[in-house]
Image (cartoon, rainbow, N blue to C red; front, side, top):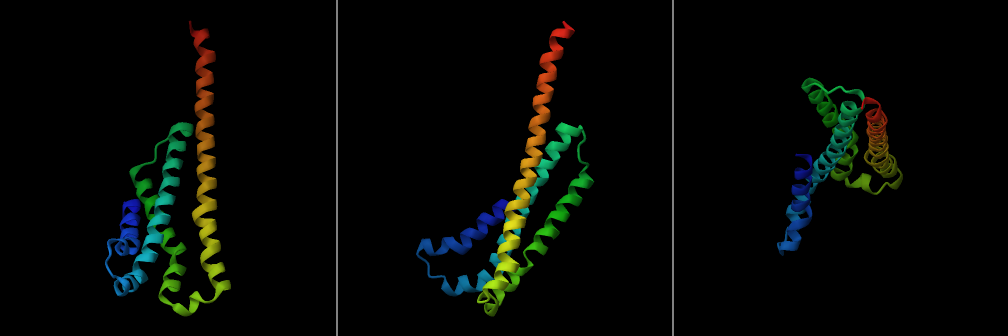
Length: 151
């Protein structure tokens, strides 16, 4: 859902000029809403990928599945967290005076973007993938060692 909405938003924001349509007024009008929503959906997509990786880790390493209630709660947290993280984007796209202040943009947009959309998801995905792969390798080694003993 999040990825398809992000693609649809990119088509409306970037795709219309390639069709030869003059959409300068339309683009200015819709960009105040579509740019922040696109960032929110993009962040949701990344955090849902981390959630799926966490669920895979839970199933493989802990032999526990998330309940549907827990999954819906986690998806709600992902949605709310994505909105909160991207609130400064709403302020910057709707206020032209803030766009000129580089230090404020660095503190409110660039650093949180780097931390919340790159560093935290990459570290979480790396840790969950490493732990899952390690468990699979250990299970494979146990099967190889125990198989001759059982025969």
